[in-house]
Image (tube, rainbow, N blue to C red):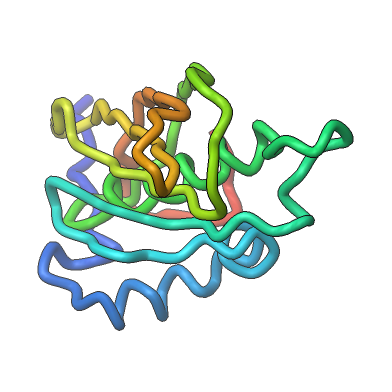
Length: 154
């Protein structure tokens, strides 16, 4: 039995920032509810930001870890799908290194290794004063086969 070919990219590698913002505007949680924004997107580096508001704070007044994770996961979704077959995360971990200061978080995603079936990525989160807030590491799977159901989960 042969392996099905990779599916065509959902997003071309040379997608403009406007095209990417329009596509990811459909991410109702990260963009709509959380407020994550794409700042820069290239096949080897993606930068996203999140302006911290009251809705991002936990009961103790600190930024909720889930808000930081969402920003990292959003940057991952962009970098792992840019110019690639439809890609989903199969494993991700985050280490919270420091409490953020200021009112803006910035995620910078990079490709550690991009293969035909698997991709490995790191997303570093910093606050606006340069504090390294978190490091997020993910392994992603590139979908193969004759169809791709976006509602399907692994």
